[in-house]
Length: 219
Image 1: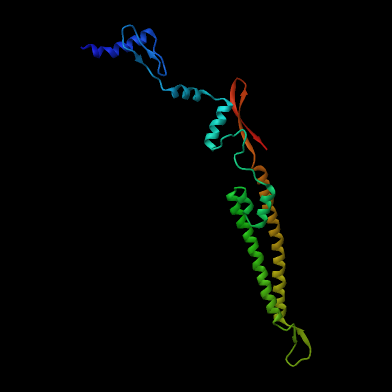
Image 2 (image 1 turned 90 degrees about the horizontal axis):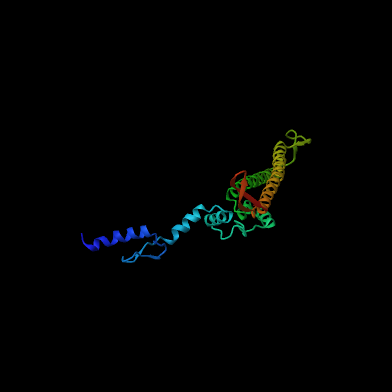
């Protein structure tokens, strides 16, 4: 076996015996042996320390990376919402206040419910107008019998007037119900806008002999 083949094994053995092996690029050498460098990646030690670090600051940093926020402690997860603006948006158009608050599912529900109530208002209003025109096209009083001078209430006029009054009352009822629904949707948008800027903080909490996590909500 040549001397060159023994250089590397002897170098490693000498480094282990003398304990002079160094990390991160430092050189270890034995007497009469070539210099030997044992390099450990610099990020290995950092990763191990990071895995074992369960402090509050480290947990916040991890959550910031996951949520895309640069600073959980000093900023909200979403931009701040104006409750008045949300309420006015909900009044201006069905579901617009919920869209402003980033509540897509609620916006769909609000749009569907308000549209249903508004369509019923329009439907009954048109029906009332149709029966009103039909009533006005008829004579209110007609002779009770052919050739008679006595006048009686026209049946066609009476029936058209009854349907006109019925749909008129339904229109008024649907207007009240729609007003209530709009008010509820506006209040929902107002409350969601108030709660939208809640801040969540994760802190370490000691329980007995152990350590746990606590979620703190700031309004």
